[in-house]
Length: 601
Image (cartoon, rainbow, N blue to C red):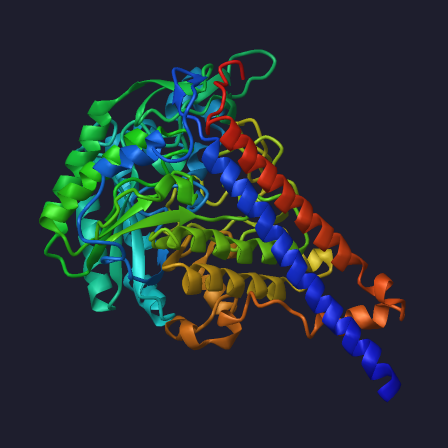
């Protein structure tokens, strides 16, 4: 035994050193990549890239000085939340509540060439397709049954302390086709605010949908831009088909030109309309104790001009600060969770934070360990924002690792190439609002029905697609979900400033269902004690002790060089990256800190 102890100890030391060198190597690599990203930033103007100086005096950072306050770093930025979203309630999303949208299947057979005007695939077309009277009748029943006191009590029982409530701008300044369609929505919101107060849940009001659509998806209120490619009377198809993903646009902030891949003008009327909505909301809720904060717009898409968005956020913040200075002002990152964009912006401003949405459902198929690693890595990204004085709340996340959820990428549509796994099918559920809901559930005697988009996601023969099970791939589904859930909670809760799971419930998908995840113990069952839950706080610790015996049993005793081969590889790799970094910095200095214009790219 003593003879074996020395080589085992030596090998364990080598394994430990290898892991340290791997970490140093990765830090060097990503540090260099971050420097390249910062120094090679280019501003888009008129569809062309123009030369931008780097280093001190960079125009973007210099311009941020006009968006600063005087309270000093760290002021009012130590808040924390744990909760879930009331999605699919006041802003419809077909994949969350498919029972509301089955009635639009087979529209060609009923409406012929008028089908495009009768199909509902979001809030906007739901109101247009059904007309204000019928749509409002169905919506009122939906509002009453989708979020009940039982739901709010169940959320509070998990130990959550907050709910994020998506709202539409039409609730405060009505416009067509919402006029008379969404009558009663404000009263429903008041009902749930009272319930939140009763169960001690603070509320983040999230302006989830705005006029013109900020991202072109159904969650913005209107799916843009739908192009119908065939209608019922066209021979031989005799069905309704459409395009969305290849033609998507977002026209809230301006006029999007898909050919140029740029905005040709800014829509200040839309921006002013949203600011007016925020002003109304502040006046309505500033003295309602349960309201904790506001999010001025949800998920403006990645092509949003950041300078315009920053000015909009600033104007909205000033409105909130003037009348409700105690509110938290949470801004979506527009899918730019990078310190470069945010460092220096709103410096010294109290009660502000970044909202980011982190999903793995659109990741490529992978082994569970890859999803675990990705979840823990997001903690490092969040920390990089905190290092420049930005609190980060993960306002949306789930446990889904695939795109199988029916209509996740749009009603009767899918992102081209998705889903990338074999989805399961289950009986479509009975309608939550009662048996009188038209078309729900789909008949077991009918196959796929139009309309059809660019990808496949549809009920057939009474069955609906849901995510694949890890059991089918030789793993324990519960174990994988639990390992993933605890790692995400660690990254978002222990490193970040908290989180809201998307969604509080769904009709079909447990991995998008907060209450179901809690019941299955995929997330901690006592959320109020997460800070002292060892399984959470150590979820992303390196697993050295448990993996070493596996390596030892698999690896024969070899020479010191053989056992430590990977150590020398990582050492050489790290040196190479450092050398490249030095050459890069020297080249920048020789070039005066400038890049040549990239107009020809």
